[in-house]
Length: 269
Image (cartoon, rainbow, N blue to C red):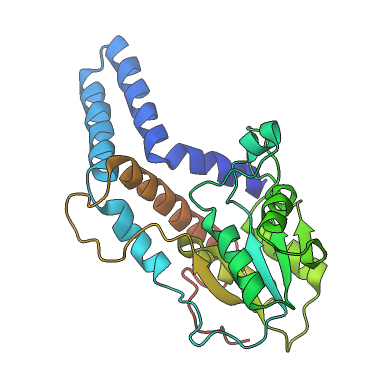
């Protein structure tokens, strides 16, 4: 139930969908002769457009997420495995065409291949099924071998988990599948903005991983005011930020994490 509710709520609060809802409400109100409600709905839609597209709101909301975890410096000398969260492939396209088309979060798989060369003895774990609510797509755990093997990662090093639908299940299924030992070091590779929620969920599952963020969406030096990016990216940044902050709140309220904004410091057990 949580999975379906989270997907539906995430769709509703996305700026582009919220604009559509407000415009539709304005049209209904206009037909019913409710001029005040019509004006209110249209003004609300315009405000959402202005803030999410023409200002730096999205980037500013992403800053505390992307800056929360940094890559370890110096990096670990030995690593047992590299865990890559799904979400970097165009699942529907790959299901239809059989390739490995990447989306804006695809850098995580390139980074995984780089890390695999740095740590030749480490296992490379890809965790991620198809988390789409309606659109059918190929699971990242099924697509990833085609790309990673093509980039030089040996097939026998790959560990694939293709059943999880969200990050909560990523953490649970991966911990169960790997059964990591306390002395082992495991790297977690995912988007920088998604790292706080991911780290909180893996810690809650009893799997203490080392954050290795990638897929940065901002430069980190954006200031309050008009957008310093193109309008399309600004809208996408706002959408991602709202979805991620909503996820952090939802997981904290439901007890799936121990902190609203998990940080580099390990929780007291």
